[in-house]
Image 1 (cartoon, helix red, strand yellow):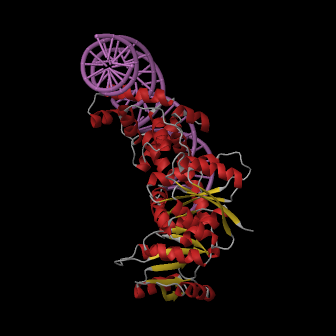
Image 2: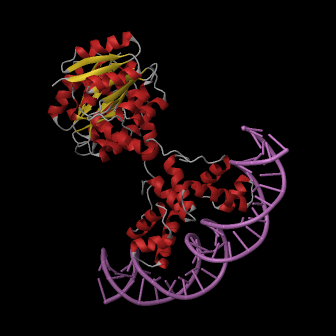
Image 3: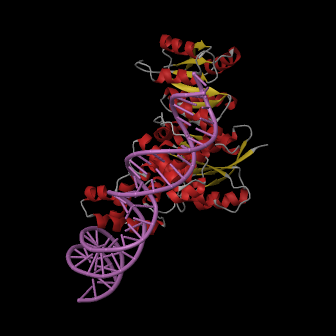
Length: 214
Length: 214
DNA sequence: GGCGGCCTCATACGCAAGTATGAACTTTCC
DNA sequence: GGAAAGTTCATACTTGCGTATGAGGCCGCC
């Protein structure tokens, strides 16, 4: 079964290049080309491609908005959008992924990656340009890196801490856990002592930072 | 200039396969093979490869620990590690990236991706298996998705909210911003009203979720 | 110029939260 | 079987927080 592709880019030469690369690949076929975002959306409705290669910089309607339109459309099977661009500015990456793209490629990526990105998209997976991934990972490391070892909270203490981090009051927590108010305070005091913090708000912050809740 | 590669996998057949694929590629050369993590670290010190293909499941020292050892080693130019595994369990991905890997590949990825991953790693970039990327993006969307439009807080209100989200008490905030305690309360009340929350802890939670602070 | 929004402050009340101390019961483990 | 740790609760006091109301000054905009 062949995967159908729509190429959206305002430069004819780029479209031509993509078509040559993809059509030479067994199982892939370019079924349409669009020169701007509006045309891309229209042709996508008409041809129902499996994958759309979408440039960001395009006249009339830019690629990001077109991506949002496709992702939020009423089509039974909206096409998978792989965003392609010359510039790897961070805002672009985030905007593209939030717009619903399942792939982000730089134009200097090379034919092999282009093909892989399309194949991945067709399967519902996502491929991101390696140079972009590096920075994505940097952000990820912020949240995931060798997390400060959580002081050993007991089961009950953790439950109380989690509840605090969800914004519950002591009285509500008592109700939730079916224990008395003084008991909640007792546990909370233990938590604060172990964490070295002074109030419930700091407990909540700590819980979010360390991933106790999300 | 050719990129040198060390292949670390406990299965000889896998090593053989990788070697065949990579050596067939111009500019890539496999310079050593290791059957466990300890050997991988030792051979990496000896051969100074540009890239290490590291399996996770290995005897003696597993791939994740070996990756940590290489990333944290005293080598002038530590090799780039691409983690390769048959299982894409989430913990593996996170652990690998935190261990310092600059790449994560599933063994079913296909030769083209393997080659691309090695080339990317040699350049300091990172390539992640598309099927894994999908889930990484899901997490990312948690933080980045069409962010609930922040109610328009005024400058002062934002400052107070930020301070609250850093765990400061009202009195401390008054000191920080050089205003009186009642003024702090006044601003905080406005914030709570605009956000529709009931206490400072919920303000802090909101601030963290929306990225007002990090 | 006057209207509205923002920043500032005061006073004051009720209640939640923080802190301290003590104590009984259960489970776990040596 | 006894020590240690965890869970539960009570009492009581202090502090900070949440809430209300009112009010004066500053700035931008119609």
